[in-house]
Image 1 (cartoon, helix red, strand yellow):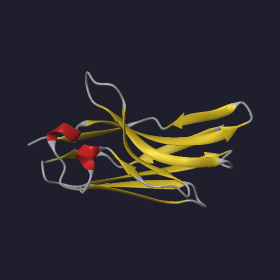
Image 2 (tube, helix red, strand yellow; image 1 turned 90 degrees about the vertical axis):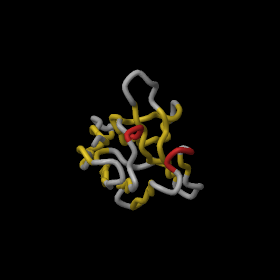
Image 3 (cartoon, one colour; image 1 turned 30 degrees about the vertical axis):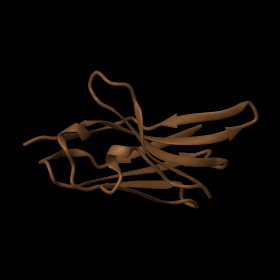
Amino acid sequence: QVQLVESGGGTVQPGGSLRLSCAASGSISNIYSMGWYRRAPGKQRELVAGMPIGGRIMYEDSVKGRFTISGDNAKKTVTLQMNNLKPEDTAVYYCNARKVLPTGDRDYWGQGTQVTVSS
């Protein structure tokens, strides 16, 4: 099993910044990708930023130039720096880790952390 513990989040005014952090523990070998998803009220969960090991970092179009994902592959940690936040960024943000298993890929999720952007 893999456990993901998130920290960060909160409430900020438009134009502000927040930093989300996530650390994986447990059976972390064969994790080949980590990233952040979000789910806004009434919407489906979407990928915000993904960081496959050895692959290209991906960002959702609306966050490009404002959000930056980074991490430590050896420690299996991932951070999302969010700048110039907008009200439409309001959502529950989830850390994700994807692992290769003999039966196929499996996703693991953090508990979620609320980000609210409001004046």
